[in-house]
Length: 90
Image 1 (tube, rainbow, N blue to C red):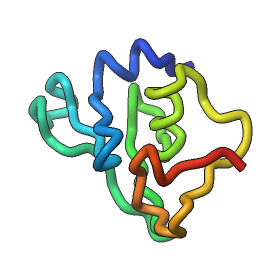
Image 2 (cartoon, rainbow, N blue to C red):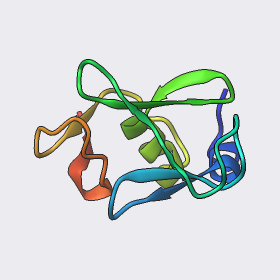
Image 3 (cartoon, one colour):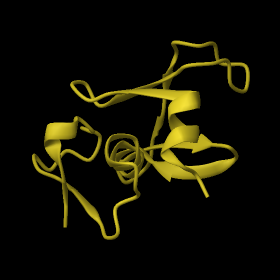
């Protein structure tokens, strides 16, 4: 199971932009490169240690050291806007 400590070793989360970047080289992607792919449903997702995660859930893990127990809502309705101030537990 992914921990906040492990996530922070690998990625940096900018709470003002909602963007994750690599802290280290991962899978051929250099440190500093933006991480995440838009899904067909409009969410941003990424692989961390070979497991698929949605960025909004990782933002909670990064900021609060725990995965959200329930769903996360994007306040402005934009599923790819993962700024910390735009996320709330449902």
